Length: 350
Image (cartoon, rainbow, N blue to C red; front, side, top):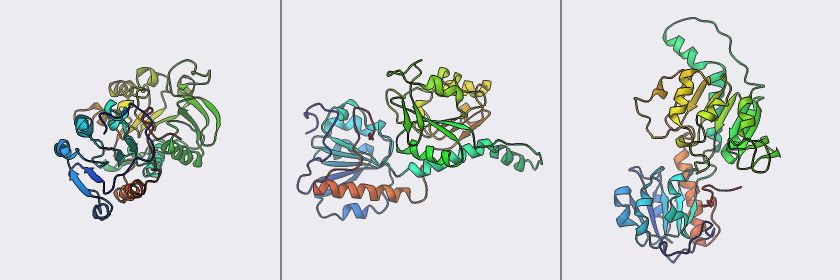
């Protein structure tokens, strides 16, 4: 029972699976590829597929839930119906849409799809850095106009990148950027030195001094040529990139956001781009998606917009299903689950 479960933010990593448990798949209209593999496990009592509209009716008696509707917030509204739910698996890395009080305070275990998107997102970030440095967007514009205009471009090697978010995605980004000769620093929950991938990690706050006396973003932002947002959306990161944050960046610096849209205050970013306070922004995520056609971010100088696709490469859905099936087998066997979210933090620690 979830509604009456003791309040906890650290659920056990081995939820108790009853004999022949009921699995529910919440989808947005497209079923997981090869979903027959999920249906085929004889140890499951029932596998039910539903969209958000049918979630209220489908939740009672459910023991495990696969959230395949990637950014759905429907579970929060239907939570009172979750009377036997022991495990929720998200087919995403970010789980901010699941961190509502009822679930956080329950004994339900939450797992995510950590690892699937790390390398693709790192490749995307490297691609955007190179696109900015070599002015590929300008070259494509000139080609469409059939204009021959020679320019000089920038080196990538020797530039400094600040990657905010030191989890697996941030670390893959750091390794990619280091490999092309960039000086990479990190921003995380606490300041530290000697990190294997970042060297120096500053506290991800705009305080003058960190909680332990170490550096913060106030020290690192003015030195960075590229600022990459790869942090989970939490109370601490929501609205982090505001007018003050942007004001600390170099006028020649670029922002890249591959995390969650609400980390950036879009109106402040639009103002900074329009004024030339920063040189550019590559944005893959937005406060509301899809980005409306009237948004100024489509056409502002230095703005590169992509439709939340930085981690979506050929075969990614199949990889998500493979990971879920691995965890499903663990659940049915009574073994420890992979990638258990610390609900007090909103992400998988470590």
